Image 1 (cartoon, rainbow, N blue to C red):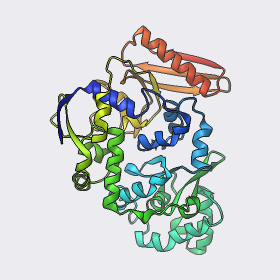
Image 2: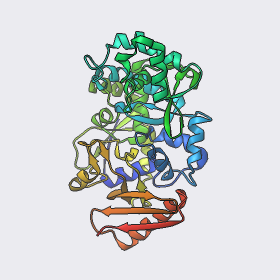
Image 3: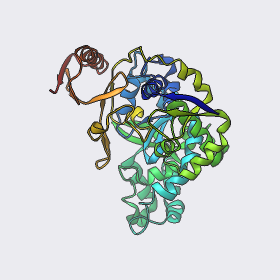
Image 4: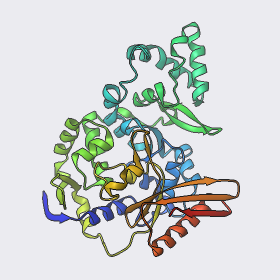
Length: 386
């Protein structure tokens, strides 16, 4: 199905804001659905999932996410897209794991090779069983897990002492193997648990790789469509051949749409055509103070719909692996922001790309006051660079 209508970039941006709950916040009871709608929250920076939800959920408090992660366990934190840490619904772990596992071992995890690393067979036959044994009783911090594994290995531990890297290391690999996930932190340090004990009801084998690719594509389009095959590959990290097959196998649920200024093939779920027609470009979207690595910024290769080309380098910094916290006004990134918090005060420093209109600045100031209250600070110090 091909739609004859040519979509404007403004309509696309507005649709993304609606899908990402940045046009109208969701209710607290719908927190897990919000995380599902955006296909997971980037969690490499510990504060990002909380600030992402603060922008999307009414009256959000940190405890809401903590309870979903560590009490109800309706959400889980582990490595998925592009070898990065995300928070997403636990029920979807089989989809993410099966869709992305092979890509880790064949491509993203290629740095884990000899001579710096033991062979994959050695890791699976020697280290994995010891990690499994070490986590039998309870989740452990990275260092404690390392010490326990070395203790179990006894005199054979020397070659394996550096495998528990703070960047993931072998624990990233065991996550993709479906053996471990993140557990509740202890003293602000990451802890790890066996998947079969943390989420005993989860069966990773209930779906095959091909089916997982198809389900992941549909989830992606629900959050980021209209989008291209290249967008999906960039976001997920899977191969173009796998993406193409998934697109072919789900063609009955998608429509092809045209976007002004582009000859690319954009796909949208048919169920979202009505939503697209409901987009009101005359209604102004609220301002947002998005955190580093917010999901809105990570879904597409072409980001001109949300930021001008000349300012991209201020936000996206691939050489240092950083994506800045951004100020969003009516769906456009107009600057970056940083913050510092003391016992009493929250200091927010905004660096706009150009002068912000007086009316918009007032709305941003109000947003900063709300952030101050959320973070429990008594005083706000707000500065806007000229």
